[in-house]
Image 1 (cartoon, rainbow, N blue to C red):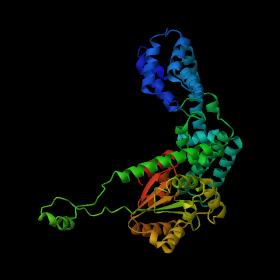
Image 2: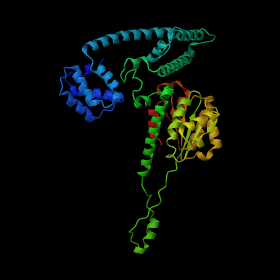
Image 3: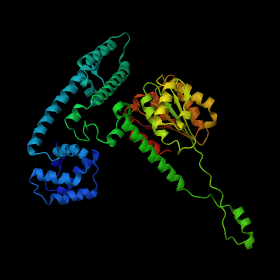
Image 4: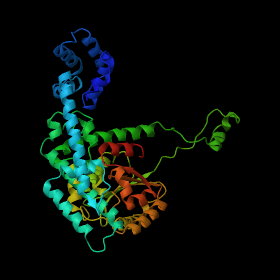
Length: 447
């Protein structure tokens, strides 16, 4: 239902504020002054004429031709005619009824021993979006599991976890295929921001909120520019914090008395101890196993922009073992050269994950990097072989360093499903980090 219906028709100012907020969400720059100009312009035209009303708004709010498409779609959506509103309401009612019937059917098909699996509405909807062949294969798998030897009711949570993982995998692949195909059906129909289909190119804000795993090759240049801008912004913030600190240390009473002996003991000049500069070290550990290499690539790109600001900085990649990539990160070459060298020469890139062995290698081979002024940043989804051993080694590392900040690309709602997440988050600071905006928010508060 259009937002206009939620507000009184006479409340022009409120409607205009809501409309300009929609434009901003779509990436169209609209200032408060321009919004006031639009309000004044509307008072000079016949607002009963839809064309005059639209032309006045467009003249006051749109400054760039590339923003014209967003304005047109949002105007038609927000200031819908009564006939259009009624037609869209009927379509929405039909869609809702069909959607709910589909959820009921999916719940009946995904059962274990006569009871439906505990799946969310979004997971059931994902099942319905799969092809008939994919749904049939999943049903065959569940039937074979249910009728297997010694399969009891307590096996239900395991089956639910497997089904949920398969549905997430299918959703990721579908999103990637849609983006590589150019545009999804939602964007082609002119969906508005905030709905299920804000179209491609809806601005840097949309890209920063996109799951890093879903960013396709066509979007990589734009994502790299966004990372460079954000890392530069963070570097400036770090430098400002350093410069705004005290220029001298605490009062040095002994030096003050000695230096003022020439004045007969009267202290005219105070002497201060030299300010101790922070010598905090940062050690970055990036999981580059098959499920993590996309996320770690983005984190490495982000940290590449901070290499001049964070002086004592070391970077390691790991999957089945540890690899030091600090020399490549500190090299003066370009970012693309860094990624090419690291990926092509790496012995660990894209392998399995053995976190425990990698942490032990770090503590044995690089003990000088680990002390009470060291902050360790780990980028991993916590999924590893030898989980208990990995938890033990993580506890040993925690005792040797100042703090450990864990960036986990798994969405927060999935964390309860993994024992590894529960165990490791009890030892370290763990933050969700599967989008560029989350990466910026976490690191800006902890560097």
